[in-house]
Picture 1 (cartoon, one colour):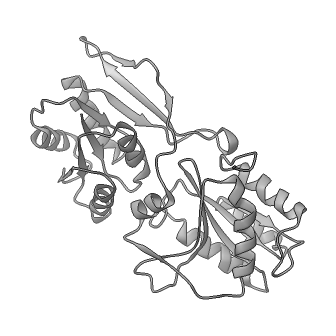
Picture 2 (picture 1 turned 90 degrees about the vertical axis):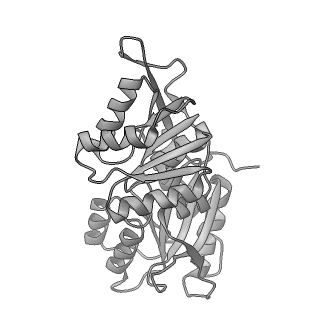
Picture 3 (picture 1 turned 45 degrees about the vertical axis):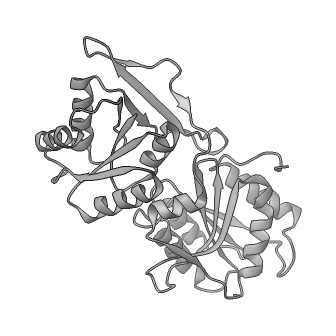
Length: 306
């Protein structure tokens, strides 16, 4: 099987269907823009046997279709077209290619419920002899966990390393990680994207299935609220960790109401751990507050993992 993907700014809607279908070869179409090229290269690094090619201008449908025909040729294997990524004109051109050749089409759902009901949902359609589109039997289908945090980071970043220095906030970060660990699939701490001279650090990352949460953790202090929000929205921006990462700010001190409003506007969930004492585990009340808030956004394990 050959999978055709359209590289856009967000790589996960391409990576998950590719991992699920496990094709013999993946064709990755990108535009002439550097962001699209970079996304395609990162995806290629996470997939086996890939072929990258440019469609040029990502907004000229007829030229994109010509490029798809030229690059795909007349393959003997079944071709499946993922129309989730790329620009909307790229999606239209890829859909037309699929319609004309009656290739199956897949779409990874990027919208839907959050929290405990959040799922990775894939739709797959097939054209009949009259080229009418039908949802294939057994779809939509929930995808199992197909990525690790390492995959997620490498899909969005050119590389990363860990900050091994001890900081004043490290005990609180460790306490939060310890409280969350039984309820998530994976955790990473103190992650620094390569090439930013340690100006951006991700205090905590968690993965629940195919979904990721990013945490900024601070002990508080005058004037730190706005800085912490800026730090979080920078590292969880489209350019770093993509649009699908949930954002959390954990603070030991109470946050000013004006900054809570700002956090809400920026899709940041604030968690105040008012009973935390440096060097101690979180109190049961703080653990409950932390878990309840995270569970409203990510599909956590309600019962601790065994």
